[in-house]
Length: 634
Image (cartoon, rainbow, N blue to C red):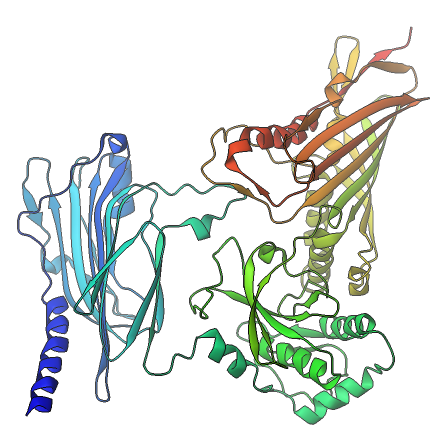
């Protein structure tokens, strides 16, 4: 009898939460928190954003009930169209909209409930929606809907918006499942009787900034649902299972062994073997595109072929194992999006899987088509990840290395010669890339050549070499060191261009002529308007720029001044991590020689030194406007 009583008690307990969410409703006369003075001038303010998910999984029934309850005050009429159209949907697998209500609350307290016949349902996906009509500035829009859908194993709930949020709430209840949340630090958690509530107050306006961890910094909540007792996403379980054995879909192990034999890897060093493996796979295999179907492969050594990402990843691992090259599998995540959880694989977040070679301390990146054996992808630099050592069946923490500024160098040399009447400038320019920029550009040009037309290629060259605001007619161009093999030696990838500029470099000022030589370094970004900074500056990678401009002084002219071309800006602090811009100018015979050296030694610059960093960035933009002043010889 005790057991039967307990069973009925549990059934009642579970049923109570199912019934509670299905019976959810709003207050007839709501009372909202007062809007703080700091938000009075905001175009709109979210008064509250409440969400509740209840998941039940059992032998005969499974479902998820979702509730969204939202209220926003519209302070400016221009915001109305952003918030007056509501869709009752969540993860796209809607089975049933159980309840859907909307109302407008006027400044005088009058409440206008939108009639149910205003709810529209689409024919194809059966999503219900409603439009608030007659909304004016000062109104509060409030709605809630309850949906029933198939259970989802995970989800991401973003609460931060482009207007402030006074109160955010996420509730979860469950039957027969384990429900885990990973929330931003703004949330506080409370639990009782298997009902968990996370709340956050005064969420500020989301400010997206260039070179910032925007997605990572979003106020959000991630959840995962699993069925006990087995937690398949724990790293200690997930990685051994993930790597237990290759699951080739489009070829067999015997073909993989034949592939290895034909690579003719013999007595080379480990470094040489890894380069040979990586170069062949990166050069000859591509990923199938979305919508494509991979074909069965009879010979892996037979030139260009397409495979799934999983088959390519497993081919690397199988080859390393067959050649007895010790390796670890490393798992990382873009530092711009988040951090790898120390305990488990959090499914909604995008992870990067690669191989780490302990002997050489370098990485193989099967999923990054552009990236050669060496450093990991730039998004991972400085972040922590997990590694799994199959030989010992052990997990470790890894900190991904940061490539120095000397690894990625953009270097250019421009020679500028004017016609006798100064109307046309003939330009010869060589632009060289190494490091991450070298590998990315090498791969991108290869893609354009194979998939796009000549116009697309010339547009790419114009943008990279001169910038899109420089009117230059390109008369000839060529490339050097295009093959993937040059990535391993970090050999510069060169673009050689000849072009003509007609009256776009000169300006007359009385009897003086201003020649805008600064344009020759290409278009530069600036931070003129971005005076304040919320987040630290996080660059893709440390980088060096070197530019040399050789200007043939026209006959009959001499240099009056070049002071605008001389700039010198740098951040203070540690010389090993600072950034700087410096240009020097000298006259050598009938030539003016300008040299620019710009370097970013770190991938992170704290917001406390933003003004110094901003001065360096703006210096490069200022330089593009600078001119040498010529005067006629007497």
